[in-house]
Image (cartoon, rainbow, N blue to C red; front, top):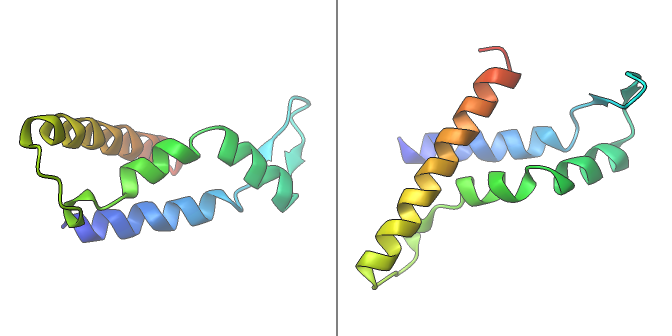
Length: 89
């Protein structure tokens, strides 16, 4: 199940580089460079952190890593909520 979610999140990251938005004047912005720049400045880092499959890393400090995994799971919850709100599921 984790793999399906990670692939879904990765697909969403790719789509966000091409999804138009409206500027301050409420005009649609379709220029790829501006869209990508806006995305990188907004939620790109959160999206990448929520997508990284940390289960493949050898993390030996259990207590410290347990907190890290909890934070990453919270990021995934935030990401899922964001996807459901913006994609009209």
